[in-house]
Image (tube, rainbow, N blue to C red; front, top):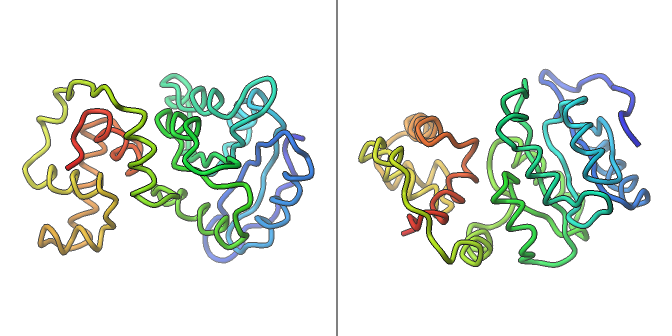
Amino acid sequence: MGALPERPVSGSGEDIRVLLVDDQELFREGVRVIVDAQEGMHVVGSAGDGLEAVRLVDELEPDVVLMDIRMPEMDGVEATRQLFSPDRAARRTRPVRVVVLTTFNLDDRAATAIRYGASGFLLKDTTPVMLRDAIRTVHAGNAVLAPADLSTLLDGQFRARAAVPPAYASLTEKEREVFAAVARGLSNTEIAGLVFAGESTVKTHVGAILRKLGLRDRVQIVVFAHEHGLVG
């Protein structure tokens, strides 16, 4: 376990750096083979529990962490919480995305990990193509499960709605339209058609929303909307 030898980056851009976290070594090795076979991504290390995962994220600075939910010492939910704690996030020099791995759909613990900062979850029997696409999706700042599934998970987590923070009032009318569309899981293309604006303008609005609300990515906009009862 730990860091793996670096390999040259492929193509003109830098590879997506992936950290594997699972207490079953055979499973980790299988996933490593799949990830390393994909163009534009590679595994930089692996961990057998959440404690080591937190240490390796600080040490190796991966872009994406594939995090098992159930592990000894520290499970994936607590590891995710620690990874996105304000102090640790402030020290990070590059963003990190977490995808939690679970054995059954609509896992309440996966929902808790998403509240803590994970970008979604995958079933452990997912296909290599779905795994590849999930890594690329979260690296781009998006969720890796359907908006309907994400809403179902979060609705169960936020039965008691928190008060809407003052920062929400700072959003312009157009930004609120975009916020509502993102919360529903719409893509930039779909939002552009809805608010009669170009995709570049939508991206600018999303960036302003994230900045004003102190959120990391679009997934956190969905969480924020559910937490404060702002889902239309």
